[in-house]
Amino acid sequence: MQYAPVEVNGTRYRWPRRPVVVVCIDGGDPAYLQQFLKDGSIPNIARFMKQGFSAVADGTVPSFTCPNNMSIITGTPASRHGISGNYYLDVKTGQAVVMTGPDLLRGDTILAQFAKAGAKVVSITAKDKLRKQLGKNLDVSRGNVSFSSEFASKCTMQENGIEKVLELVGMTQPGMYSMELSWFVLEAGIKLLEKNRPDLLYLSLTDYVQHKYAPEESEAKRFYQYLDRSFGRLTDLGAVVALTADHGMNDKSNAAGKPNVIWLQDILDAKFGKGDTRVICPITDAFVAHHGALGGFVRVWCTGKATPRQVIDAVKGLEGVESVLDKETACRVHDLPADREADVVVISTANVCIGASEKDHDLSGLEGHRLRTHGGVSEAKVPFILSVPLNDEYKLKAGAATLKSYQIFEYALNGALH
Ligand SMILES: [Zn+2]
Image (tube, rainbow, N blue to C red; front, side, top):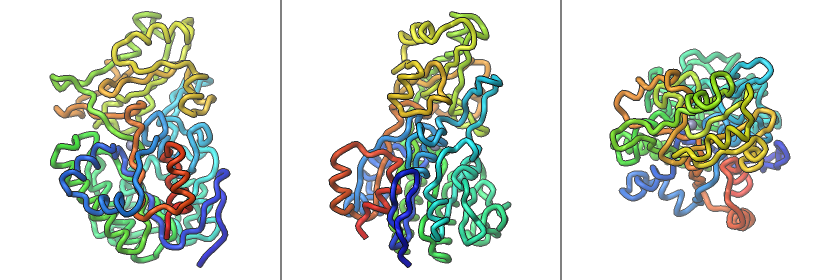
């Protein structure tokens, strides 16, 4: 059935003629694809890149999971959707607020608006922290589905639009830190495509593997080979497949294998005194074992006498700092929502990360692994791949400007030749 285009947050999206599957390969740095294309272990992705469309796009900065998933699902930058990190500081209460609530997400999601127009949609995410925002205003009573593989065993018709997920997928409940958590998302998407033939699917994986393994390591290859087979099965079922990532990943350890960390709160406390500034690491969530809450982007709120100018002067000369910006500049340069931005934003270089106070970060979960993490500009380049070629209009459009990863639904729906 063919319906009228659907407008979401100012962009018109064409009704899909066949199922469209957008996959967010969490932490899917372009370096992984380069490595596996070289050795021929991802033939389906190689075919998409050759016969369909392939580019490297700009993701949202900070290059974290929540902001980028929200950019992709709303088709807008963070300045519009408001989710600029996993955490921000509520200056009225002094509390760090987790930004995973649907009430904090501004605007509509592409999935919810298509569902409202009569499409059948599916949203599956690895970690449950994303599920509620991805499923914002999505009516799951009419055949639409929204769940996480983390809570696959607990799905109910009322909350998720689906039940008995483990039986459907034919896998056991995967562990929180496992590559199976992502595989489960893909396998569930394939099973639902076979069974219900939904119009639009959004499948969002987890970056457990990329945090732990460099592209050269065999476990990373094993993971990508599975992804590649799954993408092949999706196209075999007649779907258009669109691949992107929320962010890349960089090794941020030194020659001895220890993390290269700027302990910014300790530095600022030594300079201005305790309580004068508050460093928030917006990578923080409930599951920090694989990165110790260390990323390439932190926010500093001036809560005492120190002015933003003084903080900037204190930080700008530090080794490993790529940029230090006041609020206004950070919002302009990185398209961020001003009402949730700090007084100062600090971004590190590719091989360095930034923490708050050394005593507050638990690095025991790294278990002898090198620290690989993300958050800065150097992890904001992501793949942008379609399994089918672009039409002439979108070929022109793609050639005229750097692609943004939040345009992936637009390209898959309006630009894909099918
Ligand atoms: Zn991520």
